[in-house]
Image (cartoon, rainbow, N blue to C red; front, side, top):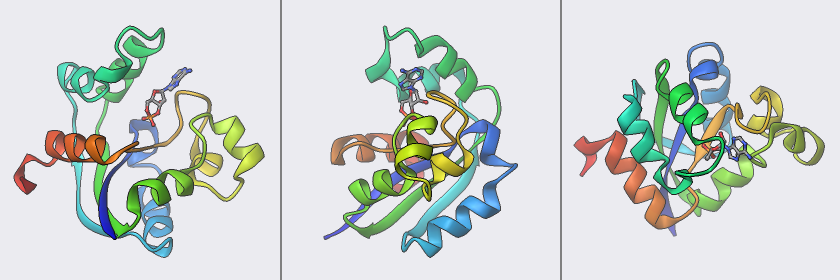
Length: 138
Ligand code: CMP
């Protein structure tokens, strides 16, 4: 079933490695149906990552995500949500290098938090995240 997911290149790779990562995205069979550079406010980053509120990394994560523009994309493909998460690799970039060396996080991630890219984890998250960053698609 054709599905949409929300993907984003985090601030440290959004401009530096955008072209290379976008090439991987399209060659991986994902259709980019919307894309834009997007500057989170701190409040918007806190809302985006609300499920992680209270975790020890929450403040650093939301400060970092709102520190410079991200590159946001809506991707479409059969089974896009699970396939995109497989394509980007495990959350921790070191684990990605060990277990999924061809993944985006293995190639462009630094560590457990600075992991290059994001992918929605469920149908509900995808809807919520797309609406937050691309309200014009509603
Ligand atoms: P992301 O897929 O965007 O979703 C939540 C983010 O929180 C995750 O990628 C990482 O950037 C960050 N994160 C998750 N777990 C940890 C952790 N244990 N330590 C630091 N950052 C984390």
